[in-house]
Length: 127
Image (tube, rainbow, N blue to C red; front, side, top):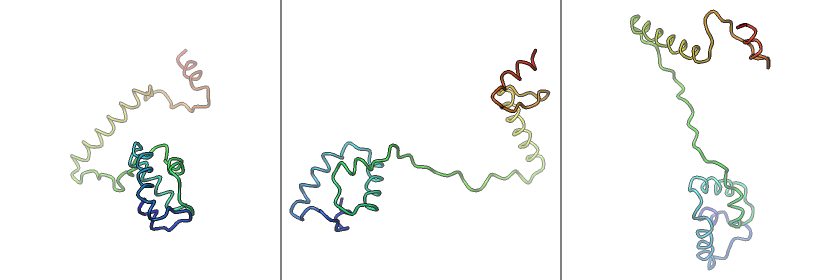
Protein backbone atom coordinates (compact mmCIF):
# COMPACT_ATOMS: atom_id res chain seq x y z
CA UNK A 1 0.00 0.00 0.00
CA UNK A 2 2.91 2.35 0.75
CA UNK A 3 4.19 1.89 -2.78
CA UNK A 4 0.76 2.81 -4.17
CA UNK A 5 0.80 6.00 -2.10
CA UNK A 6 4.10 6.96 -3.73
CA UNK A 7 2.48 6.74 -7.17
CA UNK A 8 0.11 9.62 -6.46
CA UNK A 9 -2.80 7.94 -8.25
CA UNK A 10 -6.05 9.68 -9.06
CA UNK A 11 -8.67 9.24 -6.28
CA UNK A 12 -5.95 8.50 -3.72
CA UNK A 13 -7.30 8.89 -0.16
CA UNK A 14 -6.43 12.12 1.61
CA UNK A 15 -3.51 11.87 4.03
CA UNK A 16 -5.80 12.02 7.07
CA UNK A 17 -7.76 8.99 5.74
CA UNK A 18 -4.76 6.77 4.96
CA UNK A 19 -4.67 5.13 8.41
CA UNK A 20 -8.36 4.14 8.23
CA UNK A 21 -7.95 3.00 4.64
CA UNK A 22 -5.04 0.80 5.67
CA UNK A 23 -7.16 -0.77 8.44
CA UNK A 24 -9.96 -1.60 6.00
CA UNK A 25 -7.50 -3.12 3.51
CA UNK A 26 -5.82 -5.19 6.24
CA UNK A 27 -9.22 -6.44 7.37
CA UNK A 28 -10.24 -7.40 3.81
CA UNK A 29 -6.93 -8.76 2.56
CA UNK A 30 -5.33 -10.34 5.66
CA UNK A 31 -6.52 -13.88 4.93
CA UNK A 32 -5.02 -13.98 1.44
CA UNK A 33 -1.77 -15.85 0.84
CA UNK A 34 1.13 -13.38 1.03
CA UNK A 35 2.76 -14.57 -2.21
CA UNK A 36 -0.49 -14.18 -4.13
CA UNK A 37 -1.20 -10.82 -2.53
CA UNK A 38 2.26 -9.52 -3.47
CA UNK A 39 1.68 -10.68 -7.04
CA UNK A 40 -1.66 -8.84 -7.12
CA UNK A 41 -0.09 -5.63 -5.83
CA UNK A 42 2.68 -5.95 -8.43
CA UNK A 43 0.05 -6.07 -11.18
CA UNK A 44 -1.89 -3.13 -9.71
CA UNK A 45 1.26 -1.01 -9.30
CA UNK A 46 2.17 -1.55 -12.94
CA UNK A 47 -1.27 -0.93 -14.43
CA UNK A 48 -3.29 1.33 -12.10
CA UNK A 49 -4.16 4.86 -13.10
CA UNK A 50 -6.67 5.32 -10.23
CA UNK A 51 -6.52 4.35 -6.57
CA UNK A 52 -7.75 0.74 -6.36
CA UNK A 53 -10.48 -0.58 -4.12
CA UNK A 54 -9.88 -3.85 -2.19
CA UNK A 55 -12.09 -5.59 -4.80
CA UNK A 56 -9.65 -4.53 -7.51
CA UNK A 57 -6.77 -6.08 -5.56
CA UNK A 58 -8.77 -9.27 -5.03
CA UNK A 59 -9.57 -9.45 -8.76
CA UNK A 60 -5.83 -9.19 -9.54
CA UNK A 61 -4.90 -12.17 -7.35
CA UNK A 62 -3.48 -14.96 -9.52
CA UNK A 63 -5.18 -18.37 -9.32
CA UNK A 64 -1.87 -19.90 -8.25
CA UNK A 65 1.50 -18.54 -7.22
CA UNK A 66 4.02 -21.32 -7.55
CA UNK A 67 7.60 -20.31 -7.93
CA UNK A 68 9.10 -21.76 -11.08
CA UNK A 69 12.74 -22.67 -10.92
CA UNK A 70 14.22 -23.66 -14.26
CA UNK A 71 16.39 -26.73 -14.49
CA UNK A 72 20.12 -26.24 -14.16
CA UNK A 73 21.68 -25.17 -17.43
CA UNK A 74 24.66 -27.47 -17.15
CA UNK A 75 24.29 -31.21 -17.36
CA UNK A 76 26.38 -33.57 -15.29
CA UNK A 77 29.31 -34.81 -17.34
CA UNK A 78 30.28 -38.44 -17.62
CA UNK A 79 33.48 -39.33 -15.89
CA UNK A 80 36.77 -39.03 -17.74
CA UNK A 81 37.82 -42.39 -16.28
CA UNK A 82 36.83 -45.01 -18.93
CA UNK A 83 35.79 -47.60 -16.32
CA UNK A 84 33.55 -45.19 -14.45
CA UNK A 85 32.11 -43.84 -17.72
CA UNK A 86 31.31 -47.41 -18.86
CA UNK A 87 29.61 -48.13 -15.52
CA UNK A 88 27.57 -44.92 -15.81
CA UNK A 89 26.49 -45.81 -19.35
CA UNK A 90 25.52 -49.31 -18.22
CA UNK A 91 23.43 -47.81 -15.40
CA UNK A 92 21.65 -45.48 -17.84
CA UNK A 93 20.98 -48.46 -20.15
CA UNK A 94 19.51 -50.40 -17.21
CA UNK A 95 17.25 -47.47 -16.34
CA UNK A 96 16.04 -47.15 -19.93
CA UNK A 97 15.45 -50.91 -20.17
CA UNK A 98 13.41 -50.74 -16.96
CA UNK A 99 11.30 -47.92 -18.38
CA UNK A 100 10.78 -49.85 -21.62
CA UNK A 101 9.74 -52.96 -19.67
CA UNK A 102 7.20 -50.98 -17.63
CA UNK A 103 5.80 -49.52 -20.85
CA UNK A 104 5.58 -52.96 -22.42
CA UNK A 105 8.10 -52.21 -25.13
CA UNK A 106 10.32 -55.17 -25.82
CA UNK A 107 13.41 -55.44 -27.97
CA UNK A 108 11.72 -57.78 -30.45
CA UNK A 109 8.57 -55.69 -30.64
CA UNK A 110 8.72 -52.65 -32.95
CA UNK A 111 7.55 -49.38 -31.42
CA UNK A 112 3.97 -48.52 -32.25
CA UNK A 113 2.89 -45.24 -33.76
CA UNK A 114 -0.25 -44.07 -32.01
CA UNK A 115 -2.70 -43.33 -34.77
CA UNK A 116 -5.66 -43.73 -32.46
CA UNK A 117 -5.78 -47.48 -33.10
CA UNK A 118 -2.65 -48.53 -31.19
CA UNK A 119 -4.53 -50.96 -28.96
CA UNK A 120 -6.03 -52.67 -32.05
CA UNK A 121 -2.56 -53.01 -33.61
CA UNK A 122 -1.19 -54.52 -30.40
CA UNK A 123 -4.08 -57.00 -30.21
CA UNK A 124 -3.53 -58.03 -33.85
CA UNK A 125 0.17 -58.58 -33.20
CA UNK A 126 -0.52 -60.82 -30.22
CA UNK A 127 -3.16 -62.88 -32.06
